[in-house]
Length: 72
Image 1: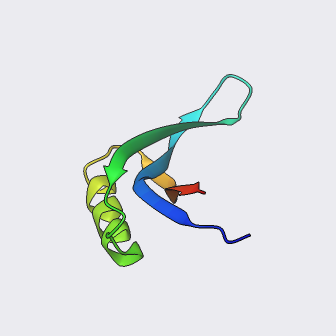
Image 2: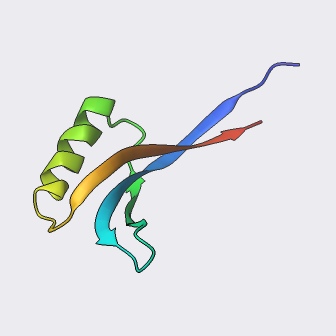
């Protein structure tokens, strides 16, 4: 059986290091940006992520692109 794919908008997620808790573990907070065009290249997304990181107080730990594809 042939599988077809329907691409939907992706999401950009950036994880930030927000210091340490009382037990000394890193506090990680995630900022999510939805409705990223499926036509956006990985380079486009990383460029936008770096621009957004430059506006933040905390250091970034990870940049993620979450694809959203329906399989039929």
